[in-house]
Length: 588
Image 1 (cartoon, rainbow, N blue to C red):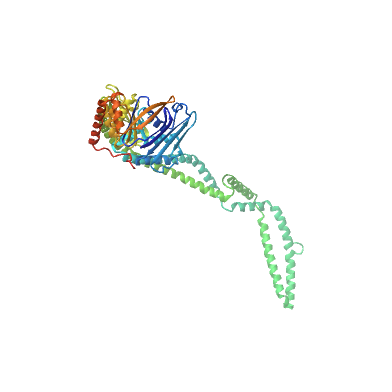
Image 2: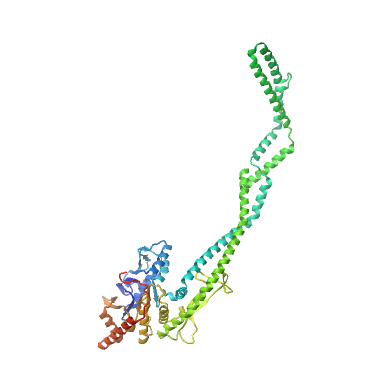
């Protein structure tokens, strides 16, 4: 509820602090005193804007501040909205403050922290519903019509479950889209990947192969030099004029052996020389074998060069050495395997989406049926309320539409577009005069008609609307006394579930006020200033008397005022049980 409104330098208001109470608050006063200016201040506060023309003449800055106490339903929604923007709601109190300077920037704060107009605009529907010449009129925003109907139809639980599954469907569709994108790219890459894998596999590489080939190539490239060195070494070892080193060693060995036969002291030496002879003999054999192996076929060198060229070509494409090339091959094979998995995942996701769409289609059909059944009851209830308000000629209808969408849900043989609330597009239509066609509620020109139709709607669905504060600005335009009394009754009954504020000129409405506020203006030093005061019992009676007979009041007009109050009091006392209050009780 609105606990307090502080207004400074706004229009003809210099400085007021207004504290509306629970139940029905009625604002009355003389013409031009600023009754609607109080409501304008609330509107400006909730819009986050004060026009330069609204700032009090000869001042440079206007300030508006509203203190709200939140009911549990509003608190949960507002806390969630603030959390999305990184702000925290510490308790059940919300303080909105707006400061605006001439030709300057406005400063908008919520509980002391800066807040943007866009965030504030999202909070407003959970704070105040203003009915009149106001951009905050929720019923002129058709997006709220379905919310009201679902509340009336008690389909909120079904709608919440539908929204949960719709979000799940959106997630699956996003996954499918991503998977299809990946798959399309993978398919484009598949042929190239297969070419790479085949090229590497055809090479039949082995680790260590390159090093071995490089060594062979180096040997083959030095064959002539190697043969010369081998020939020279063999000549020294076993050839030459005297048989080489091996023949010399054999002669030495024979001599030392003969010495050892005479003197055993050299036996070990003779054995060692003999061992050396046999070692040298084996070395000569190995060198001779190596020499025979130096007769390479020229084509073999060509094969080695070709093999190395292939390996180097693959290294330029796939890695700096054979181990890296083989690792690249393994990775490529994995990617090729995954392409097959992508297709499987696409089939799986497609099947899950089809099943979930079918389930959502059934839910949408059931939800729509419940809504249409409730819509008929709501139409009758609103029609009754309109008759009570002397607007029996007005026809009210709940209009249902759907939109075909090839990507939508299967619903009763059709493929329909959907949102998180289902497939229904709901809007309230009215015809205000006989013979006129039904038109959207927001196309009605008359403020009074809009306000009274809104009152009929709110009255019909008052138990379901958790907007804590409702303001009706001059709902009684063009209404006479008898209809005014019915309006007063409707407003008071509606105020039992909301804090209700009504700007009125009818005493029949003011008689039902739980709190009566009087707006007046005074002149001082050539400046007009607006004031608002809370009338006590005597003041309430006196103001009703003035409203009934003008400034010429007397005992007769006071008697008529007492009669109005008595009638209102009897109605309040004998009125059927009221809806559970959505606003906190005194003392909270």
